[in-house]
Image (cartoon, rainbow, N blue to C red; front, side):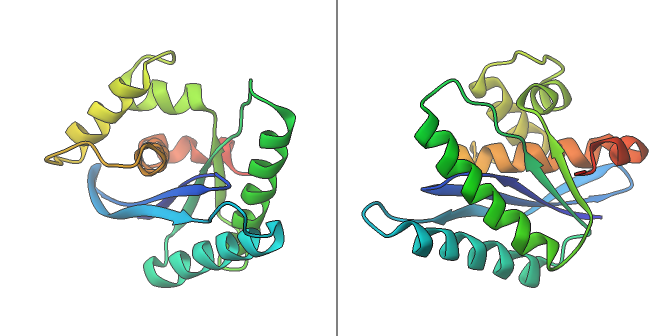
Length: 164
């Protein structure tokens, strides 16, 4: 199974592609789709949409897993990231209906065994689980990889996390 994990963002949308075969995971690739400040919103959303569309065409994932949004910051940021997430969901839906979502706490729990783990602990476990030399950078990409790992580990229970 090949999973594309996505950490929604407006300036940086992290992504990670993980393959799971017989409970063994392998990192295929990761990165970020980047948009730039002072670019009109519609152009930034189009870039995010096109970036995710390109990713599903290149990697042809069996499933796409998104990190759910939780905000304690300002409303404007929440709206922009929500719009970015929507653009990514539309691009992924054009490829497959197998879309899933996980909360940050579920991702932390799956990757570290602790639902309130620190970001650094999650990053270290991503590095360890995928036998990487270094922690993946930027953080947005590491978060996306963690989301993909979470989906790989969900096994037959994955259907409870399908987007509704």
